[in-house]
Picture (cartoon, rainbow, N blue to C red):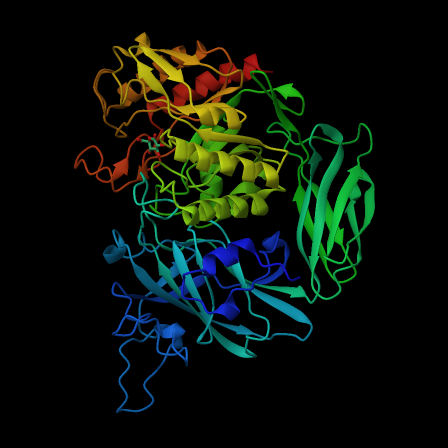
Length: 611
Ligand code: GCB
């Protein structure tokens, strides 16, 4: 496979990697379905605010010097008593990986900068096998070294990346060192200004995957657009013997289809499904089929749901039937730690809370959540809005910023394209209307459609208010499938007493999704419903909001802001906030606020209406 992963090309540019590092095969589809060794666990770490382990005293990167040596990634020990080394991973503290660093050491709570992390592992590389060092996510920039040699770098805090390390693994002990840097920059995605904690570190799984010499690199197995009787997709092999016979089978449906990959390793897949046998995936029946892809050299199994999604006028049709999206927004954060979700238990807790509220849908804001989260949504029966961190005021005019955004979007779609739960790709949140922004976001919409024609494209738009009339009008709305917008009546604008004066005017014949509304409430703080920060205020705001939104023709769903309280540096009020955004329906101690039950009752009604 000669193709260079677009992500890797972009990531390596300007990041100090040498030319030979630039060529990396595309990220493996279905990493968890592969033979792999988990490198999760306790990693030793060194906090390095001045990047002493990366630059020499003339500020030149060690890894670009002729020897490539000198950085902390050498993991050096003094040779003798007359040798001084100013760092030592042995004897340095350790932290859990996956895990953000902010929640693991008091001195890292507000830290933004470089931390070095080291892990040792044993390997026994076999001839004829290929090895990939895979990271589920590192926020934000990662430089990765194996046994003292650089294997690559990556930018972007929420998407997976990998480096092929075939021929670089040692028999026996190996050392992997990661320089993780969560410094914010105006020209990154996201930019400097957000309303969430800038959790740094290796926040998702690290795996060493093994594949055969010629392996299944990627596949797409989903219902064809507009045809519930047929699967359409592709299979992509990589390696010397990439022209092969490959069978795709779904034993439970009696399906077995043979394709032949071409000289580039690619084959289109089209499978006619047996009539009246398929159980279509839905929140009520999240049926997943075991799909096996088998070539002469490699076999992979995935659990895949089959469902269709489309819009018609105001309706969202799931498997041909109009649905109301009973949703909630959530961050990738466990309020109880607090910190990033670290594993399946955390993820189940969050999604179960959504289900307890009678949700059939979640907005995974404001960046890609983990692959495991999406798989759980598949399994638990929750529809998903998946998003990239094109949030607020991006540097719209710079081509490299666009390239970064497009790359993160591409990596998200490539990773999750086989997940039935994902019905909407969101290209951003509350981006301010202007010609450059609309050109930027319009191109993102085109990009996502070129990658996946089967799902809907959304964006959380802003509204504008003239007097009491709230209008949804944005040239970007023409490019997406939904009239989807955030509104803060009763919180940022006006109050509970007066908010019912507002009316909404949506100028599009598209399904209306209210992607956010909400109010802060400190869990356990009780007052009357006119007192901001009280549970009663939040509860009343929800009741008022249902009245306002139910009056919008075409309302087909909502994702109030937000499932749980979450940490934000923008929220310093000492009593009510203490660096928490309190719009959660569940507090940071896991207690359900009053509005939780109000939303739950409202969703019970909607469920009846759309039965
Ligand atoms: C918004 C943002 C969200 C914030 C929220 C708030 O409009 O999309 O990220 O956290 O408002 O609480 O202000």
